[in-house]
Length: 260
Image (cartoon, rainbow, N blue to C red; front, side):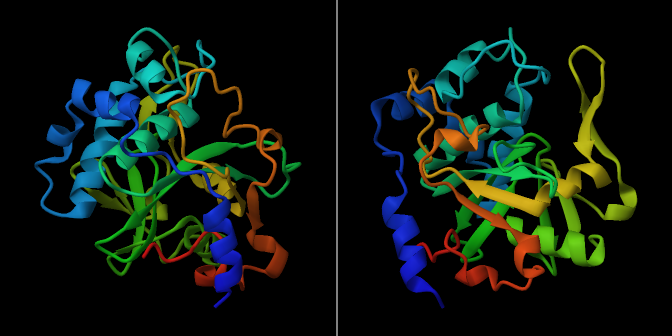
């Protein structure tokens, strides 16, 4: 296993301080410990948190505020439109404060110029499964295989190699299960009724390329850099599954270090 590369990635990554006073206040103000308290397993709790973010940011559409600061998004969610990056920023901040290691990931289609995202999602280190797992608070879902939640690279590999034949899509607090044969899975309308938000074939093509911005800090109101623009960061890790025909062992890729 390429532990050296993974350790370099981990050491260069800028982690949010879970004791950041702004984060501690956010958890208290929005009673987020109470939000996840009913969960009887870690995955239950993650779904409770994802469902809360999904419901709190209810007006999906072209953003009417330019921010990726979690508290600002929460304070203004009922009067503004927000995109996937805003769901991710709030979820990552909340999950960090609640004791998880969580990080944003920008996704892109194969034809991208590698300069910006087409969608943004989250990976969380799961103590329950001892692995990194994907969760998308914009669509409120995870992907599983044989009962195990998958990470971004695994999902992309299965989609592009097998058209998702081995994937189970688990959605919402009720954890309803679907397969790719059920696409499209619509979760909401755009706020101005100009489209639908959901999981569909075209959207799955965004699993071709993943970029890990080198921080999970989303509590700086003056921060101008964004997960949307990869050029904002000196050294984002970018993995294109097609580069090696999806044959990389995901456990050896730099972002998939063991969180021990």
